Image (cartoon, rainbow, N blue to C red):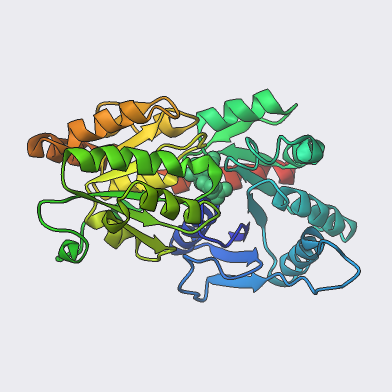
Length: 378
Ligand code: GMT
């Protein structure tokens, strides 16, 4: 099959999922065309069945906002025709599903039928998409897709609650390549980050408000009062500066490392003892799954799709959003007993196996096949 994948190319869940999906599909013999405004960060290797087509939006002074969806829909039309793409899989409704629908209509004028699969990732529904300024167009694009998937049951429920949706939504959870996360590092270089007696706590995100960064720091503050510990803060975003200031104010800045964006997530997770994800909302929590696959237990909030990933008392613990005291208590409970920590690490790894890439990607293949079949009948 020739699949066109549209996604955000930046560090962030939906782009990572789309890229890993494309790469796995290419290994399974499909021809993949990534169509976006820059090369996705996890897309290192292009090959004869993995292609990248850049969408460029020429700057024009008259426009206050440059019309990306216009450029994207034109590019989609051109690429579908040039490469004879069979199906478009768009990740994130805004504006990808909308642009894909426009492309589909333009292609129809030329007698070409291109089915669209839309995958909802979270903020396109819960935070941005449901805003009155976008809602009508988002609902329209979802309803006009040939197939719709969401990354968790919770996101499916949110979508049905917030929008008037007439389409069936299939839940296809996010996934992880378990083999990649088998600690293949003989030396995690833990010694470069912390002393032997120090526990390593990690948080990875795009440092947006929704990630509740102050709670990450407050939980760590309580942990380091109870035992020697270091905090690894990985990622870049609007909350980073205030996070550094909070660490300084609490007198813990020398125990916290701010890495910025990193392509070495698996190395950092390899030496981590605990992962913190206290988000206000999270449709899935891919970062938590990546941590679990590396054998790192998770202390998280119990919001959105996180409980579908992190099992309370097994792979870590869940607490109400903002309940820093409960999160701290649970973290210290896991970290204070070496035997218990080991058990949680083992459990976390085991629990991540439910999301093995080899189990999940065939679900997308099936959706593509069924959608193509249905469209042929029409
Ligand atoms: O977490 C983010 O802020 C990035 C965001 C995105 O759209 O890329 O992530 C969303 O999609 C991920 C992949 O499906 C999910 O794992 C994240 O939970 C989800 N983020 C939110 O719902 C806040």
